[in-house]
Amino acid sequence: MISLVIDIVLLLFLVVMAFAILRMHHLLAVAMLFGLYSLLVAGVFTVLDAPDVAFTEAAVGTGISTVLMLATLAATRSTHERRRKGVAWMPLCICIATGALLIYGIHNMPNLGDPTAPQHTEVAKRFIESGQAETGVPNLVTAVLASYRGFDTLGEVTVVFTAGIGVMLLLVRREKPRIRGEQHDAK
Amino acid sequence: MTQNSILRTIAKFLLPIILLYAFYVQFHGDYSPGGGFQAGVIFSSAFLLYALVFGLDAAAKVMPDWVLSTVACLGVLLYAGTGIAGMVFGGEFLNYSTLASEPVAGQHLGIILIELGVGLTVASVMLIIFFTFARRIRTQ
Amino acid sequence: MTDYILGHINYWIIVLLMMIGLYTMMSMPNLVKKMAGMSVFQTGVILLYISLGKVEGGTAPIIDDGYVLYANPLPQVLMLTAIVVGVATTALGFALIVRIKEAYGTLEEDEIAAMDDSE
Image (cartoon, rainbow over all chains, first blue to last red; front, side, top):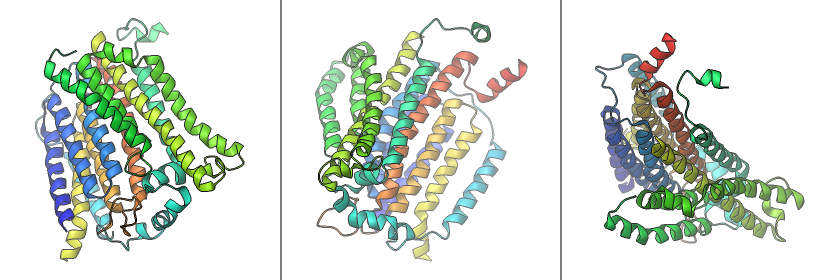
């Protein structure tokens, strides 16, 4: 019960943060708020018994992606977004419709933390019962990540690697920068 | 590079602790929360702090570009190579049971190896991304 | 009824969070703001998965003699990799933003579209 209360309070803080990110026009402030938002998300993960995910999020969200956002702002020399008046009605309608559909879908889901829910009774049960005996690793997250779903993780590592190559291809400067318009006849 | 002596002192004090923690998370990840992904991002955040406080040139001296790109490739190769080693010893791709005489010991060895591969790739790719962005700021 | 609300309020707030992210992504013309909205949406999805893995009275999925109930490790594994892959792809998006700014001189989507149309 107490963990549910902490969970709900943290999630409400997150909603406030997300709303502040939406309303803020100063982009540096958006970057800082986003760092705080990630730290709170890491807190929620801890409450939800996922310490592995929590400190990945703490290191990635609060550290690396905030620094990347600040670096982008510095490289593009932008501090403010242009102010827009009013509400964008079309996106708002789409969001309300999507949200309503999601809530309708959630209606039949088992309660939070129900041990008899279908997701806990099939494959997860086997991981918990025989994971340590089969892999010799008590941390089941590591066992599933590296052994049971090793092929999946190989794909994920390749995606990270490819993203690194993509950033290098886009941003590493090997020659003098060309002005727009000359790009087409240069090659 | 910042001249603020408080920042420089604290950064010097914190760096070895963050790096040691990254290694702990990497190699103790079988028994406590942790693993390659987490260790990789923690390791790279230590160098990120170093670069922010002592400047890009100092950080590039410690971690040259060719080291980063080589290590990023090595990580993926170590991962896939462990999978192929399983095939060479008579199992399926990424089945580590054949790597040692006992299936469980083989699984454990395989998990340690591929977590190391994940950690190497994630840490170096995060640093490559950060250095690439940071250099972009300076050249403008 | 109270049981139903207490069991589902977590999911409702997460859906609200996702929708705020989606709205930021769709309505804001600034590209950096769009990326921030996308990240909020992404953390919403990750939170939904992680809360599916929660078991009442359970503990983190690390086998120890003192415990019998553990959280579901599978969603945690999937989301752990999703976070790291997410930051790598976000970095790729930021790299594209830097190039767009160099080519067009602005980060506002409607100005970029207007420039493309006038060509």
